[in-house]
Image (cartoon, rainbow, N blue to C red; front, side, top):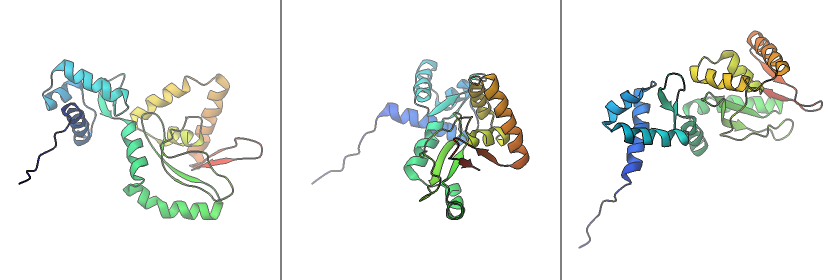
Length: 202
């Protein structure tokens, strides 16, 4: 008579996934001590797990507050793998209509700690086609980056913006500020990449 055996999992992986689940359930940034209390792990073991998860982008430690949240990699992997979410399901018909009427590629970007993250794309059959893929992180200098800077209030995105701004020279910084102010007035941002080709982000 055959007997059913229960497959054993990898304990260290289970512990790491448990940490991710705790951060998801709490729905707010947690201190090291908060996570330690919820997991009952030793400081040395917990530090190793948090360091590894941070290295892979699965969690994020704020450099100023030292508080932990879920990382951008989870959003990136989840959206690429599933290609669906309640938000995406809502915007799909509108994106298709925009593409049909404008012959432009339309994309959905969501906030992440490393900048706007593309989670859905409707590509144009002809006309202007953006050479981006799902899971791509957009720079602050892009029109999408300008829009996020103008309206996004996520504190973690502000850290990303500060890092990006530190790379700008004086001319680029002035152009960015001008674009940002114009975007706040018009709720719209346009970028002219070359003399004969334009890219549009809304």
